[in-house]
Amino acid sequence: MGNNQSNTSLPIEGRGGWVVFENDWFAEGRSRRVYRGTYQGERHMMGRCVVKIYKEQWSVRLGEMSYRADIRATDRAQEMAKLFNSTYMINGYSIEFTKLEIARINSSAGFRFLGFVRIPKRVKGKEADERVSSSVMIPKGDSVVIENYLEGEFIHFLSNTAYQDEEVQDTVSAAFSHFTYQASNGQILVCDLKGVRGERGYVFTDPAIHSHIDPGNYGSADLGDVGILKFFENHTCCALCEGFQKLDPADVTSRVRRQARALTPGRSTTHLHEFP
View 1 (cartoon, one colour):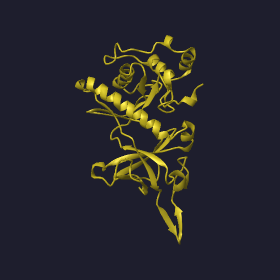
View 2 (view 1 turned 60 degrees about the vertical axis):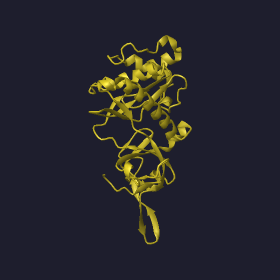
View 3 (view 1 turned 120 degrees about the vertical axis):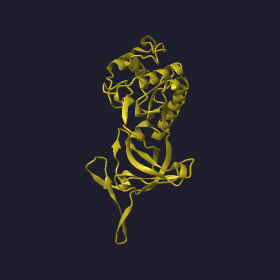
View 4 (view 1 turned 90 degrees about the vertical axis):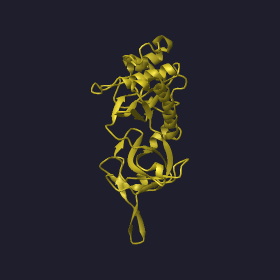
């Protein structure tokens, strides 16, 4: 697993098991740092996982515990995946989203002892080349998100601004996004699809949802009608979604159209505070 797993969580909400995870994060996004871990305590939970710790400034910006918005988005996306699978699984297309679980940090990166003084270990800091106290990076009592570790090549299929890398030869992910708009009667669009693709289909993690009714309800990556309009500006239908309804630019305000035009599709996730 790379480096010592000397951090522990309290029991996962709704379960009896817990996790242990590494001292140093191995990946980060704008809102979280990600640590490798393993499940403990329950036989059916054994295996690898990832533990995500939210950056303090991100929770402050969102105005609530950040994981609550992520759980709303993941749960809604999984509802859409079940609808999609009931229609298209017969064609070999199966989609699911990793389940998010919550726990609190119980202890942070083991202590080394110097006489009778307990000194926190030094771990990778906010910058990859710095070392800081484990109590700074992994504060006891903070909430973390836990999900299964995805085996296989991790691919970012579709961003929340409808960007698709030309090297990613895939039409199912964008068709699924279009399907969610159709199936919700234009209320939401699930996007920012990243994960692994295997023989049995796709497993995605950390989706974004654009909400027509309540922009921002699914977190700071929820760009509302701006994100929905941007998707349809860049989306080319395939056989799976041909004939589905689309957002008509005439049905949104001039401000939304202006913001969508100004929004450049990019690989990374775009957030509400990043455009006027």
